[in-house]
Image 1 (cartoon, one colour):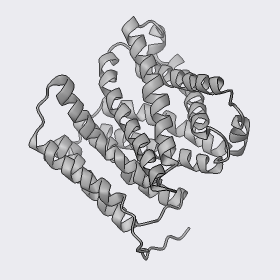
Image 2 (tube, one colour; image 1 turned 60 degrees about the horizontal axis):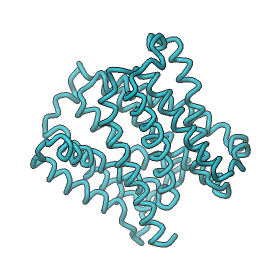
Image 3 (cartoon, one colour; image 1 turned 90 degrees about the horizontal axis):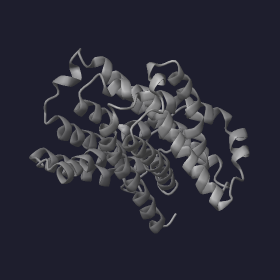
Image 4 (tube, rainbow, N blue to C red; image 1 turned 90 degrees about the vertical axis):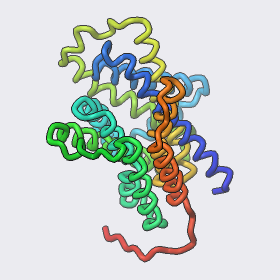
Length: 313
């Protein structure tokens, strides 16, 4: 693949990470008006329907049936995992400190790299990648904790921390499985859009069942107009567009390399807080930004040295 294609892939992934960073800010604005299951259901449903609309405009639904038929196990796992990830995320974040939850959610490159080794057979430059991941993780921890690590080991937040970490690993598993399915269906046109809309809409089924049996159902669809606007906007942009851009980018670069850009998420969020909320940047932002940029560079180095690592299956 040409260098130009790789750069385009990185741009797509960066845009996805940027959109996800914006999403958390808007979610804060509506969290008191809509419950976990209702929000997740409507966001995924809106995102999936928007992607169907895109395919309808292009008149391209070819290969969807074949994709389902040939990848039943992967799609089933994706439904279970993505549903679990959404639920675990909200349970985790509501039972731990916000900054600790953000650190745990920023460990994505670690788990994606490990999963990609076994599922996608991506084993190039492993030592270099893990060294970069270590530096990036340190940078994220410095930014979000400012060297106060007490919350990580506090028994009060232990349950929430475990749930948040489980949510992140689940999402990473979904990401790698999604990349695996796209490799299997590389000859299918618009396979990124087709995989994304299938995943989003199929996940709506178990989430809606949970919604029906939850207290949220009594107030379902009874939301203020501005809440509807944000939910629909997040469904289209934060779910449909961001997932599409992310998988579109992963088609052009190694999964572990592309995932390294997720380390930028806390920096983007902190920068947006400065621009929107006038929160002054600290020395910790400067230090962590330098470490994270170095980490991303190291992870994405292409070396000609073949590492002496054997993995037995």
